Image 1 (cartoon, one colour):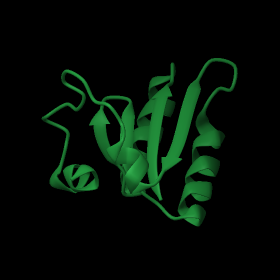
Image 2: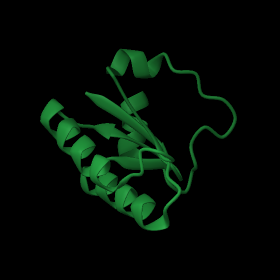
Image 3: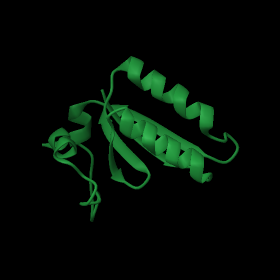
Image 4: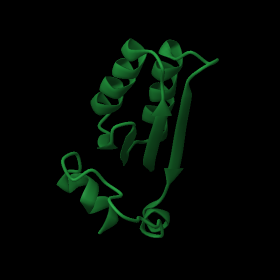
Length: 96
């Protein structure tokens, strides 16, 4: 499944941990607090557990969206939707 992870995390250490964990899970950074990639259900569950351990549920916001390739292709992107310095060929392949 295709996974989007978006976050707003106040604590620097927690934010850095989450970004590193998302990268280690094989997701690609498409904006500073937005990652995209493919995971299976078990990988997604593991990721959620890892993130849950470090965030502050009172202040932090984490969004994990799943979709299939057809839904992804229906997304509207406007302006500079992706940071060109961060987007890889693997991310582009999800769209085209």
